[in-house]
Length: 249
Image 1 (cartoon, rainbow, N blue to C red):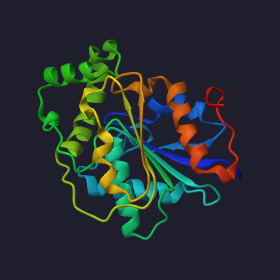
Image 2: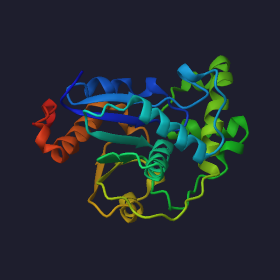
Image 3: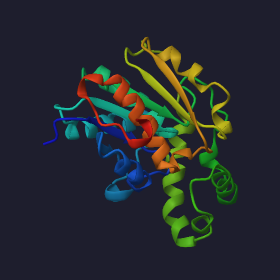
Image 4: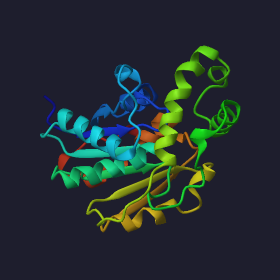
């Protein structure tokens, strides 16, 4: 049993899976025990039906956290894009059920939950338009986007995830009392010039902002991304005397 470090739960982006975050998990091994959440209908849960609304998804993720929680380690969340929204709603669900909340949260690649999304109804786009949209955002090799077998498997997953985004409606609630770190790629036009402003209203604690080189999937540079995570984890959990990744020393 590990007694130092933190426990990090990663909430993947729309269409994402555990595989997407393996490089980050490897980079963070000196600092975290990392679990990437697997949403229903893919990966090891491929036989389960998709969850069609955010409330059901958040409650499902809450149960995953509950079952896999290591009470010996501080809890940290990281959500990217749709995963940021799911992480936020999972926290709200945990609070309703009197579960211990994470002590630090990273929200990546998305404006805050109350911000009006400009990318609604993407789940209803015809296949060719949806593929054009996905290609423009990056994150999926062009070869796969032209491969029929891949598309027959992937399109139902991405459509379901985009449906969660399209049908999401923010409900006003009390802010959290824990620090947020807002991370984005410098070339990601979807988040605007100051995405942190949309997150600050949801916490009474500190709200930091970090920009890293890259587009919406800037975390593909796993080393730079992990160094930034480690910087804030080490800064917040000073009593743990965590090892810093080399570039952060």
